[in-house]
Amino acid sequence: MRPSTRRDRTLPSGKSLRSLRKESAALVALLPLLLAWSPANVGETPQADAIFTRAKGVWRARVEPPFASYGLRERYEWHDRLHESWWQVSYRSSDSALSLRRIIVPEEENARLRGTPITLNIRMHGHPAHADAFDTNPDADAFPILDPQIEPNASFGMLPHEPKSALVGTAGETPRPNVAQQSPAPVATPASLAPDPGQTPLRVLVRVEAVARDYRVVLAGIERLRDSDTYHLMLTPLRDPRIYRLRDLWVDTQSYVTVQLAVAGLFDGKPYDDARWIVSYVPIDGYYLVGQIKTADQLRFGIDRFVGGLQFDFVQYEFPDTIPPLTFEHYL
Image (cartoon, rainbow, N blue to C red; front, top):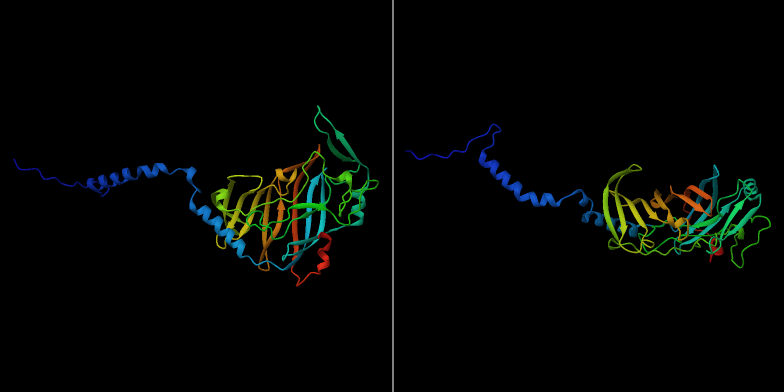
């Protein structure tokens, strides 16, 4: 018998059996790696931390305006009515000094202040007394008009230089009739409009510089935001969520400028600290400054005062060469 000759048969696809066996062996070798990959691992890559670190570096390299002046509008809905308050704000970056002067329209102020405020103290089942304020005037505000001390270049936790993040009594505001003033506060607020004793007082919120090890950073994807492609980073604090409040960042894919961020709580006091706030930044004359701060959450003041869509708009930025020091003295 003649010895058989082994031939490499060719299949209709043009590939030989030998080459198919080699490809199959290669796939078997890669199988453990393919099984280790899963959708849960998408975004949990060094790229997310690298984007976060680079975005912080861009914040540090920013050029700040020596002086800025702008308009600030507080806006919300209550009792089927849109409530608005305006301030003229001056800012000095050398010492982060802010001066807010509320713009008062006499006709609107008279409509807002008429009526009688009523304060109730309620005690339930031996718990501490809880106070709530009502008003006979349907045009009255849902909560006291207080100065929002938020710096126009605030990073909200990205850098150690942080905003005041506080509300203080408005200078020059006309009190409601027959209401005693708080004393001896340098800037008084009507006592009946003060935050309820059962609520946490608003005070300065201390934040520290955020680094990658403070958060679990996940790259959610690339999103189009205000004509820019942005990396959407999702942040979960690894400790102290009441201090590390960053939750989302939208970073420009080209410049690594922070276009928008989300924080869990704006002021350290209820109901402001229970809401999710979106902060948008706008480029103006080479500076990136706060354009808007808003929440879609419903805020509860007292027993039955529910406020929807509270937002702060920063508009009409100007950058004067200087601002007289006396402008800031009433806050020193």
